Image 1 (spheres, one colour):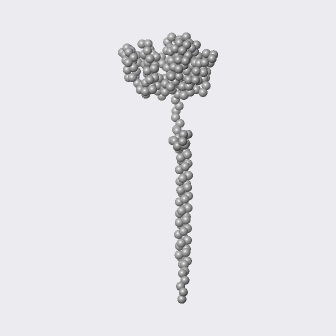
Image 2: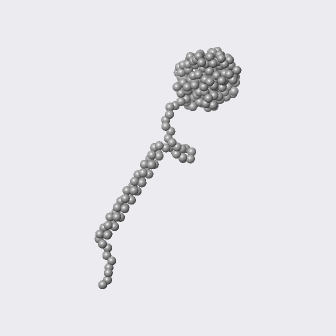
Image 3: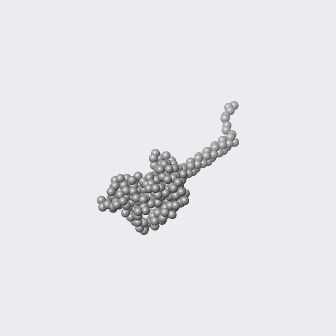
Length: 254
């Protein structure tokens, strides 16, 4: 009698059920993995941007409140005439120059610091044709030391040291070292009568003068610093030297 191998129907059904369950679980796992990868890519696209150099991802930049403009697209006409230049103004360069740069500036403003060498270059290149008039426009809401630094320059002016103090304060701006104590130390280092200077600064003697400067600039269309009027034509921002030079040359008829 020969024996034949037989497969039980029950075993066949069990194997089928087992394979079905394994296949179903595998399918669900694959779908879940695809969904996870998709969500990860989408999140990356929403929260990151590609850097221009090398394609490395960088965090998306959140919008921030603008401060001073870096440059003006084109010089614009003032909304009102600027106050006339008088002997009370601080003037650097040839006082009889054909072109007058009236700069409204803030000693704590980083763009004003950047623009200072630009103005100095204009005075050097046009020693007989250009003069600079410096006026105060402190942006007190974002520069807490702007007002008192302007007053410090005026207190130094009482002792004929305005421009020296002007240069020193901008040096402090570059060093991120702006304070009343530092300006008093500067006055001592410059050989000023420190008692007179300190009393002047502590008493807010020139606070109203600084604000008068700012009010005149605002009426003429100044909205940020630096703002420079070239024979009355407003050039806003820390523009490149070549742009400022072109406006100067147009006033000279060159």
